[in-house]
Image (cartoon, rainbow over all chains, first blue to last red; front, side, top):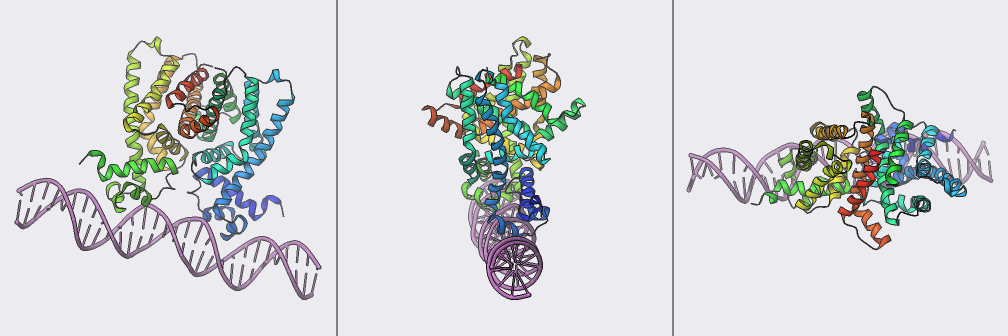
Amino acid sequence: MNKNDTTKSKILDAAEQLFAERGFAETSLRTITARAKVNLASVNYHFGSKKSLIQDVFDRFLSEYTSVLNAQLNSLESSDNGSLTTETLLRALVSPLLALEKQREQSISIFMRLLGRAYAETQGHLRRHVTDKYGYVLVRFTLLFQSAYPSLTNDQIFWRLHYTLGSLIFTLAGSDALREIAEADFDRKMAIEEVIDEMIPFLAAGMKA
Amino acid sequence: MNKNDTTKSKILDAAEQLFAERGFAETSLRTITARAKVNLASVNYHFGSKKSLIQDVFDRFLSEYTSVLNAQLNSLESSDNGSLTTETLLRALVSPLLALEKQREQSISIFMRLLGRAYAETQGHLRRHVTDKYGYVLVRFTLLFQSAYPSLTNDQIFWRLHYTLGSLIFTLAGSDALREIAEADFDRKMAIEEVIDEMIPFLAAGMKA
DNA sequence: AAAAATATCAAACATCTGTTTGAAACATAC
DNA sequence: GTATGTTTCAAACAGATGTTTGATATTTTT
């Protein structure tokens, strides 16, 4: 059997999409299993609980994302430090998302909505899980940034990085809807790559301000 | 009886805080009425349904916010157009939030978390309600921006405004947690006004990029 | 091919959800 | 002070939720 057609991965696929669309509490296991065309009890059989399913959805996405991002940061670190511009750093952050989009044939906004929801879960188990397991990549990214901009203080970099993440997650999470609005206003549907190409100079200018 | 101690406003207060903390679906009417110390049935008596309660929470916040913002935009419009810098426009967007924070003695992050959640509710009734009733202020703001920066194309302004909103909502929604992290790292607790003072040059630089 | 382990399934379970009910308490008007 | 309208309250309701069960089917191992 194809690895993507197992009951387990069919559940992950359906859950990922539904969680992104509606949120965690708003998505019932019955909705997930109906879309995945599997039995209701198989969620608890394969994942133990709904909580674990949510974590596993994030693990699948984030482990793929961080492994690509880490590879990018590796090559940036080994290359000449003089070429570490803000723009290339930001591209390193975004390009794994575009790669994932192509590979999975799934809109970036799905992943970004998931991330946004994890972020909104301020008191929940999910945010702790995500930051504990994947926070180190953000730390790595911060350190690279510091070496590129030694004139900025540490807390300036800390905050500016969060402004940037806010723009990225917020805009890309809503990118499908925003692109439709923009299409109605300006008679042209932008590709997601164009949106990103517009966004990076905006963010870079802020970072260097 | 004091107007803020009626059953109705006690429910609104409790609901506003709990919705911001946990989300709409994750907050039950029983949790709300327990915190508000009122009877369970009083929600349906005063608001009709949970849906209406959610809308009323937003209406109370947004009507206060937009009325202050509109006043600010009025005075900006009547003043000399040459003084319309990006920074003053952004301040007009944020300062009503600071005013509300003082008046209600409630952290800005509560309001911003609410806004973020309304934004995340992509398919729900809430987003339509909010955009239908309060979208015009954003349009007003956009028009002012266009007049200040005639060199930018309309879709550039559209997108840059959304990048800005992303940064603002995302950062301010998480400002309490972020300020604590920053305090642990840099041994100084920043005031929310300082965070904003740091953010505005960042955003202004991007807007002008 | 028999045995053992793994996976699927329909049904039931206990719990929690928003909402409704009808009586009791309270306030207001005459 | 009685009558009328408004608000509160405990209790119950119907429906949905995550989870468990025990039987059946499927796959893997020997």
